[in-house]
Image (cartoon, rainbow, N blue to C red; front, top):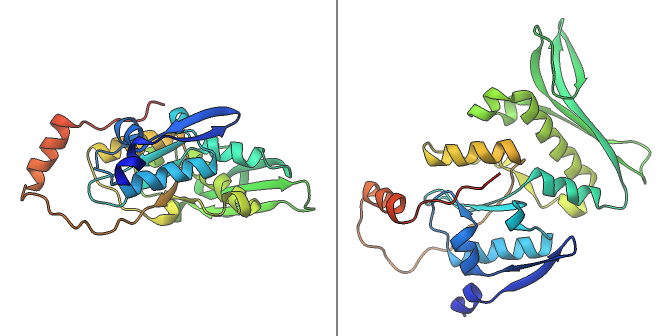
Length: 244
């Protein structure tokens, strides 16, 4: 049964285009992070793509595994926006940053601020045709920035994007309510290749993720040190980094 799940194609359509996924295809071409994903994690990713109508070949979704941590499914901001825009009641959005200026909180549209401003957070307004008032989200930079280089280099862009995702989720809970950003989950990060992959994802998507919990393995692995395992992965199974 497990072998059939890995070899049998799951077929569905995304925006009128056919998508075919098998477990083996996912393991070979669509896993990032260098970790060894389980069959269970692959099936979860495959089903999420099918039911959420996501095309991983177009970088709309990523399956990422770092070491022994639970696998993460990250959905790109572009796919997130497409889902909102396809909703019959979607009527546009506004977004920007919140800064402290002359001891006052000021909401600035876009991702710009004056030299003397202090960045405090981000805001977004999402409009629905069936509601008289917009859905408003205001978030704090302190709660979402983890000090990674992308947040240090582009804090205004990152906090604005995160505010948009939060506002869209509140405006369309039936379509987007089950998706959560990495920042909300407070997933710890590691160094080396994980940081590199994570920075690329942060620059091109807004990290909507689903954690997948594995069942304990019944079989045991040979006693190999962590250093030897990392060398084995680096030499024989280099990670596939997403091409943005």
